Amino acid sequence: MLKKIYLLTIGFFLLSCHDDAINLKKEDNNSQAQSMFYKIYNSEAKNHLLIENLNGIYDKNNISNITSISSDGSPLKLTINGKTLVAPISLIGKGGSWRTSSYDVKSLFGKKIFLKAVGNNLEASIFNNNSSIASRTTEDGLSVYIPEILSASVTELDSNGNITPGTVIRWNKDVNNVNGISMMVEYNPYEQFSTSVLEEMPSPESRFIEMQDTGFYVITEEDLNNFPSGSNLSFYLGRTAYAISTDGNVIKDTSIGAITAVRADFEVAY
Image 1 (cartoon, rainbow, N blue to C red):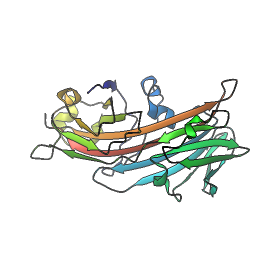
Image 2: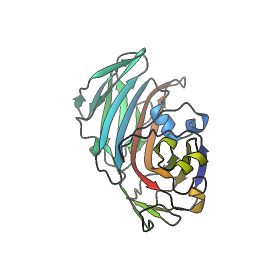
Image 3: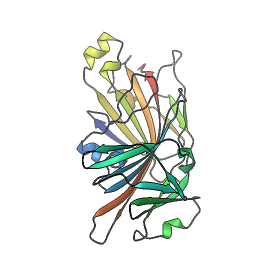
Image 4: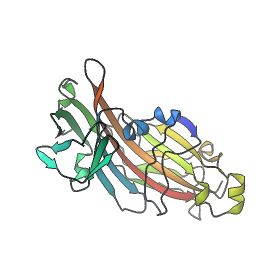
């Protein structure tokens, strides 16, 4: 299986004190700027729509949100298939943002979204994936396929439930997802229980792996050999989407970012 591997000194995922909870850390880092994750959470567009669905592999508590962000004024109103979403507004600097969980965010995944700015509103239309929406031009708006919600399982652990080379991560394959799967393996020194592990690796380190959306991945020695045996690692799987529109002067105007991700923590036995 072809894959690209990046070693990052700081992960863009921020560990939570709760097992399997997911929180995403935004980092101004050149390596991360090349990734889809960075663009999704740090869009340069004037108006940005962010769609999230985050889960733990074992903890099924779900975080689903739609966030509207405006860089130069009050957040725009968002209308989806004729329904206007209302949410609290939080002003940030000269811009602002709002977030809502009241809309059925899960229903947006596995669909195509067509988005356009009309006055002070963002208007979104939802289509099935076999729709001809992609033929619309950026003069009308922009469209993007939001990948199916990710769910995953882990098998072939050792007798103590630890990750080893040969452990298999499986997930629901999305045949329409052209962006592949991203996996982050993160070591956080503050999450270690062994003094010897902490002494061997006192600084955080992460490994970022990109692969095709085949539905499974087998952990290799290469994935683990930078981390001490007995260390606790966080494994993240993510599917993403991003699209940005431009006008005739190539001034970035509106963008959509989406992510569906899962997390689980394991001890390494290698």
